Image (cartoon, rainbow, N blue to C red; front, side):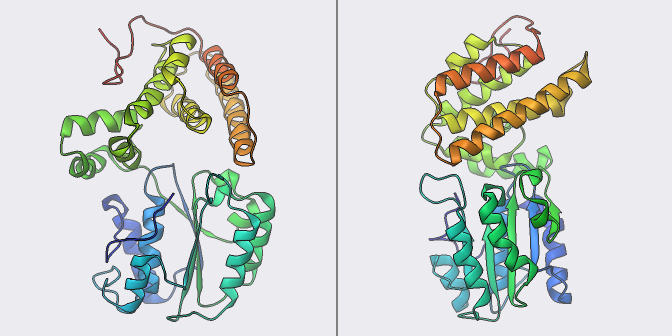
Amino acid sequence: MMELSGLPPVSAPLPWQAPVWTQFNRQLVEDTLPHALMLAGPAHCGKARLALALSRLLLCKAPSGGLNCGECHACALSASGSNGDLRWLQPEDKSRNIKIDQVREAVGFATRTASFGSRKVMVLAPADAMNVNAANALLKSLEEPSPDTFLLLVCNQLHSVPATIRSRCQIVRLPAPAEADALDWLDKATGDHQESLRLLALAEGMPLLAEAMHQSSDAEQLIALRVACRGLVAGNLDVFEASAMLGDAPAEQVLEQIATAIRTALRTGALTDSAKERSRSLFSMLDSVMDVQRALRSGANPNRQLMTEVFLEKLHSILGDRRPGGNINVRTGRLKP
């Protein structure tokens, strides 16, 4: 979840977001920035940070150098998390859903006059955490937009957002950064280039996930999750070994890593024979994993061990036994000699 209090005076985009940031600034100058933007891309590529930087820029009284000034009253309020012209919707407490009551309150906010300036900003992060009822409630703001209100939707999976929402937004696609850019940024967090390389590999090239793994109090558990699923996909671990490495990790984390492993298998072309049939099976399995993720967000409580074993067995069955021998090194995430 995004922390919205105790922010620095200025919120800047991440280095690899410079091209789209330049575009936003140009559109602001030309008064052509769409009132509904959907920032779409893989998880952990920095979409929410971009939304925060753009929100603060939109609310700032005296932008400087293409960023919020960090000195005006609006910037001070935003930094403390108390700017009444900003609504940031994200799952509350232990919920993984943005609920209809949150959206209804935000829709009411959009119809009111700005409290401190001439603009208001609503952010939904992630927008794919809305259920159908919440999405329908949001449509009013999209169909009848207030001229002084900007809506920013952060989205990990475009197909999970109803078409009625997508069609009313300008979609801005944000890919993962190039490895060199990610490493340059991550080195500043780790202070160790080799550690950055290791973490970035385990995070499948996503620097914000690598940073979170570096900073987490349960970093080793997160790393074990990544290694287990990568090892199963690569054929270097069997189901029993992968399941043992997952340990007692929460169901949400296990499902996220299994989903990531499936996407990795699809993206990297790890499938050499019967590729089309296996791809179809993987897409079907990914849908099943996402169904369980949605059920968890709605309060379901499945048997975690059984769920894990079923999905790992299914993944192993689809990919086949391609094990070359050897074991995964938990420290490096690489195959031991």
